[in-house]
Length: 602
Image 1 (cartoon, rainbow, N blue to C red):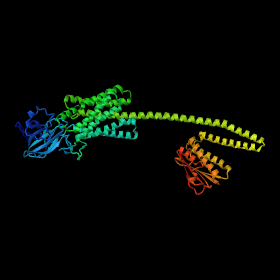
Image 2 (image 1 turned 120 degrees about the vertical axis):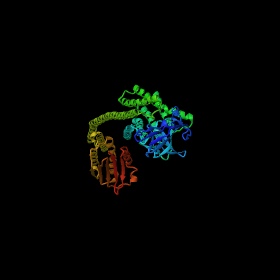
Image 3 (image 1 turned 90 degrees about the vertical axis):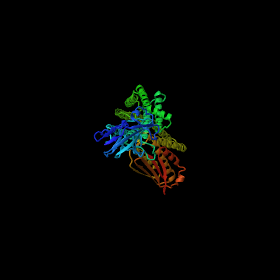
Image 4 (image 1 turned 90 degrees about the horizontal axis):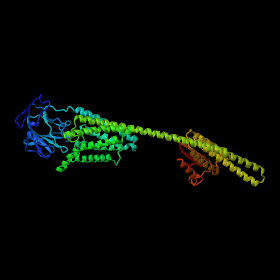
């Protein structure tokens, strides 16, 4: 049995059956209203007088009551609504002793019952007088009806609310991971300006709801003045300004437009809101400003969202990309207007005490809003990739056509040179030989022999040009075949024997320009062997790896030191040509003769 002392002189007796839902305390208690949170009152007034007072702007309300218990069970003092801050004291020899605390705005880790924002447990006792202190939060104070019971009150809506919060947080965390992966693998500037705010919205929103519903408590011990409500209040404000940034970037709102200016004002408002919420103003004027500033939040949020929505419906419904985004924006705007509607008729600021229906609407709007935007981003990315693939295909087709045109032109030039220039050189050789056979003067015959040699060199040069122009030779095997034939013919008139070794040769493509420069390098090396080495043997080695063609030219002649060799004999020309091909040329030290190495990257 439990007995409450009352000013009216009537005690309330409760037992196990009638205390199931709790016995109201307010009408049977005494109250004191003060302007200082730390002051302990000495004078109390009855409930009838207190109920006529306006306490909204006060710092704290104290409630005094006495309980006599004979059941020897734990007693719970609670309210059925969420409360910001409440502390319970027992009077011991006229001195208040703190029993416990509760409320979402205090340090949750120090609450009497951690997962209950409005209940304090009292150990079994026989008779005690209690003081219950209710503190203001965000410059507002409200005193709900308090109850006493042997049973702990559980909000019937808490399971539904917690389930919705966990569903929303899990969904938003998944979207956060999707956005992170999207940035890592497709972090192009065209997407990042709105994907980054989107992923930040998801992670801050998920952490906000987990923290606000007590699933996640952020109260570091090294910052004793920081409470969990400080954390989620600031995080909620950051989340709002991220939404404005996201909408502004996503819908490509012009910088000089009125809508852009309105969203900028909204972003600045929420930055100031963070500072206001984290600062406990003691000055009366500043506290008055802060309380009205916080009360303006839902009005400004609705104004900004409606402004963006009007702009979108008037200017941004020309593509499916913006239409999908408009669906999410519409729902989140409806939710904001519903909160504002309740504020106007309730007179309460913002999102402090959302009804269950408003909370469900808000969560539904957030889920559909985020789903619409992730669908839109995927659609936009897919469309962009498709367009880029089409452009690449067009460029590739154009490039292939250009290559075919160049190939046809090379073949035409090759045919023309073979038919016209080749025939002309052959006719010139025949004419010179005819004249030489008719002339008896030895000096003239020597001059004609020189002309014949020159025409032979011209014919050889023409064949090299025709070989380089013929696209059928644009592969490794044909290149090696041509070099082999050339080397055999070149050293045929010398006493030098030529040996060839090859391995792993394929039909890997090499361009005409590459073939020409590499051949000229080898030709220069053969000339050096012929002119300077007095070699009896020269060895060519052709080796192909996965990505390189390695050609070495080695003779057994008199040799020359690499330092001296690098200063002349066409070496600088070979180095320059291989550098143009992004290849490598070097001289390998050898006991006898000269060993040249040419490396071409395929």
